[in-house]
Amino acid sequence: MTLEDRRMRSTPKWVNPCGLAAEDFGTGDLDVVQLTDSQLLHQVVVQAKTALMHAELFRDDYARRTFKLDLANLYSTFEDHYDWLPGPNEIPKELGKQLSQEYLNNLQLDTALIDAYEYMQKYAVGLEQIVWDQEDLQLEFHDQFMHTEYKLLSVLCELQVALMERQLSSRPDVTRDIMKSEYRSISSETFRNLRDWVIFRDYMNGLEYVVQVFEHLHRGLQS
Image 1 (spheres, helix red, strand yellow):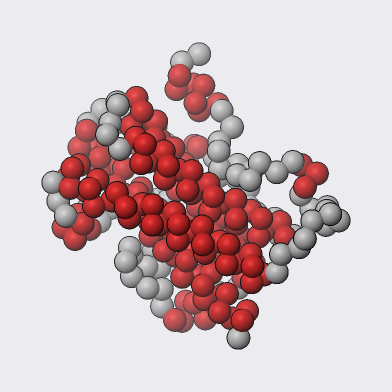
Image 2: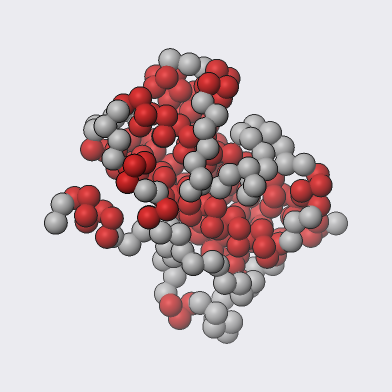
C-alpha cells in the first residue's frame, strides 16, 4: 500500500476531534460539571481567536515568499472560491470584513453550532492536504501549516463539546472525498500555491466568522 493510500484510509483527525469515548456521547448522566452556554461559547471564541492569531503570525511572510505579493495585492489578484469549501452563501463575508447586523440578528445558537462544526471540518480536509504536500516536497512552511491544522482541531473540539453539552447531533462527518483528486495531485507549483492560498484564506475567513457569530450570540446570552 502506498503512502497516499495509507493516508487516505486513515481516520481523519477532524472526526471526533476531542477523542471522546462512545459512552461519553448523549448519556446526559456523566459525573462532570455541566458548562453553561455562556462558558461554552466563550471557549469556542477563545480557541478560534487563538487559531486566527497563529495563522496571522505567518500569513504575511507566507504571502511574500510564495507569491512575491503583499496581502492586499494577493486578495485582489486571487479571488477564486472552491465549491467544496464554505462559500459566500454559507459565510457571507470576505476576509477582514464584518458580518452584517441583519445576518447576526437572525442567528439561532443550535444551528450556528452545527453549521460551524461542518464548516471547520471542511477546512480541515484542505489543510490536511497542504500539510501532506509541504511534507512530501519539503517546503518551508510545513511546521506552520502543521500547527495550523492542530489549532483548527482545538476549535473543532470546543465546538464538539458545545454540541454534546447541548445534546445536539452534528451532521455526518465530512469525508476526504469532498476534495477531488484534481485538487490533490497538482504537479504545477503555481496552481498548487494558488490552491493552498485559497484554502488558507478561506480558513482564516471561517475563523473570523466563528469569532463574530459566537461573540454575538454570547453577548445575547449576557444581556
